[in-house]
Length: 583
Image 1 (cartoon, helix red, strand yellow):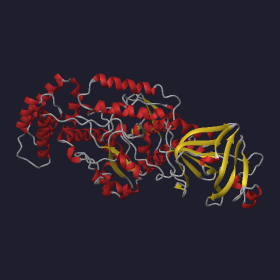
Image 2 (image 1 turned 120 degrees about the vertical axis):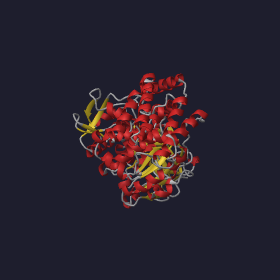
Image 3 (image 1 turned 180 degrees about the horizontal axis):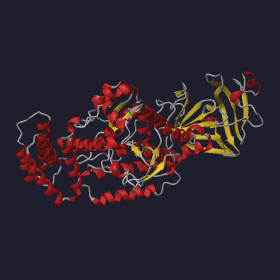
C-alpha cells in the first residue's frame, strides 16, 4: 500500500482495520510553492520557538530528521522514527477520533500529508503536514511525553462516543476541507460554520470521547508547560502556527494550571484559543489522564456503561466479572435497583475472553443478537462463577440437567443444560441450554424455537468500552468519509508561478546556477505582482551574494506589495528579518 510501510517494523503491528485510513504520500505532488511554504514556516518557527518552546522541540527536530528546507518524506521519517520506537503514516485530513487514538496507541504518528496554501500560511483549520510533521513529530522524542501519547491513545480509543459525536466529526472535517480549498464560496463556508456551531451547542451530555478529546486538545494540541507566569510551548497546534505561537504567550490569553477540570472546557477549532492550560511537567499529564480514566466505564462498567453503549449506536463491548466479553450493537438493558440484570444486542455479536474470540461463538453463531442475565441467583449469596463443581451439581447446574434459574431482579432461565465453558481460572463463563425459555415478569426474552440459548455468566459488568474485544471478530473496514480533501486542477498561470519557484529552488540547492535571478524577478513583477514569498526567497539569495543593487530592487518591490496588500506586511517583514539575522 505504501512505501513507508516497508521502512518501519512498527507498522507491521497495525491491525488491518487501521490500514483503510492510510494513503500514499505522493511526495512528487508537492510543488515548489509548497516547499517554499514549508521552508518559510519552519524557518520562522524555529527562529521564534528556540526561545519559547520546550527544549524537547529543537532536540526532537534533530532526532526525528525533520528538515527545515524540505517537506518530510514519510519513508525517510520512518527510518529515523523507528529508532525512538515510533512510526508515521499519511492520511487524508481528519480521521475518526477512535481511529486516531488507536494509531497513537500503536506508537504511530498520523500525518495529514497535504500542506496549507500560501494564502493560509499562518494557520489552517485543516490538519496538514506542517501541523503534524513540524508540530507533533519533534516532541515525541521526549520519553515521558511519548509514553503519555501512547497511553492516551490506548485509553482514548476505548472511549465511548455518542451518535452526535460522529455527526460533529463529519461536519468539522467538511468545514476544515472547504476552508482550506481555494475558491470556496464564502456562503458555503458560512453554512458549514453554522452547522458546526449548531452541533457544538446541541450535543447534550458530553460523551466519554467528547471529554477525552478536550484533554487531548488542551495538552497534545494546545498545551503549555512550566508555570502560568513563564510557560513554554509543547502543543503541536501552537508549534505549527506561526501566528498563534506568538499570540498564545501574550497577556490576551489566560494561562490556567492544568487539572482534570480541563476535561469540561470545550474548544472551537476555527478560532484562536482564549485560554490555555499549563502543566508543571510531562509526568503531570499522565496523572490527570489516569484520573479521567478512572471515571470511564472502561474501568467502572455497570449499568451506566451499557446505557452509554446503547446511546452510541455503535459497536461496543462489555466485560463481565468472569472475563467474558460480549461485543455487538447493544440495544436494550433491563435494570433493577440501579443494576443491569439483562443485556441484549441486535444483529451480529461475538463472545471473547481476554480479547480472543471464543471458538464457536463468533458472528455466525450469534447473527441475530445475544441476550443474557447478569447477576446472582435469587436467594443465593454465592455467584455461579464462584461455585465449585460440587456447588454447581447441588444447584442442578450440570450437564443434561433440566433446571430453572431465577436471578435477582426477576430474570428466569428454564431449559436443559447442554454444556458449559470455563476460563483459565476454572470459573464457568458460559452455559448453553436446549429447549430454553427466558422471561422477565410476563415478557418472553427467548423462546425454545430460537435454538440453543447461550447464557453468559457474571455477577456484574466490570467494563464497557467502544469497539470489539477481538479486532478480528468484525469487519471493521467500513470507513467512508462524506468529504474528501479537494484538489483542484491547476491553471496555466499557477503552473507558470510554480515554475518560477522551482527555478529559484534549483538555484539555491545548486542544481542550476545558470538561472538569472533578475529575469525571474522581472517576470514575477510583470505577471505575479501580488506574490510575496518568492521575492523574499530571491532577496535571501541576493543578500547572501552581496548583490546590493538586486537587493534594493527586491526591497522596493516588496514595499509596493505591502502598500497594496497590508495583510502581507508582517509576513514579509518577518521573512526579511530571518534573512538578515543570518549574516
